[in-house]
Image (cartoon, rainbow, N blue to C red; front, top):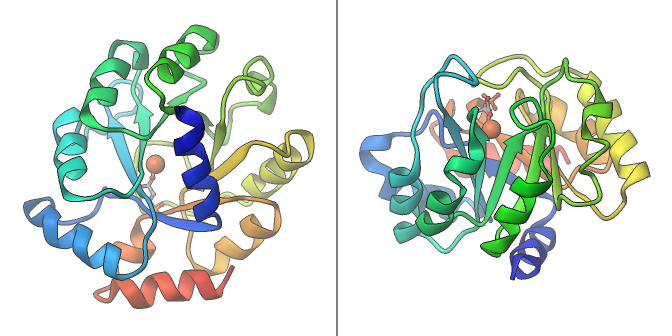
Length: 224
Ligand SMILES: O=C(CO)[C@@H](O)[C@H](O)COP(=O)(O)O
Ligand SMILES: [Fe+2]
């Protein structure tokens, strides 16, 4: 069943995924409606545990709440130390893709199986300072790689251009992988990532920092 969800994400590519870190959590319904009206085709949800990263955000209840509000694929970015302990709960909450960090789970074969057992797309993320070799053991098992172009933990940081080379390298070595980039994506940085073969572009500040989400999304799409 994860293939079905994977196909949906692939068919959406190239896609801008808003990162719901800086949205109005007091009015999620209207935030989702505004994003859908802007033509968004999937949402990116940043789960942080105050341990793997210093920041603390939200968990399953917000994912479950969003699941009730929309049929859009929910891409859940797990910045947590022990993802295996929560996979079943995030599956029940309605996640479509679960992305763990290789720094948190260096040997993830079992975790990937656990994610797939729920029919969920499995992604692996790596921080800018983590060598690409850290991924070598799992690239044939995961469906997606999330290349971080900032250090995981906070929105609003500057894009690290090294991410472009990483995307290029992954696209060449593993043409079948879904590639996603996250951190500092705006009209000036999205184009090089797209040219490098990236499929999904996570955007926080460049959407939520503007009043008109549709205009912000249009600017990003025009820059692809
Ligand atoms: O995972 C993260 C941060 O750790 C991201 O998803 C950010 O939320 C993206 O925000 P911007 O860099 O676009 O402001
Ligand atoms: Fe993220």
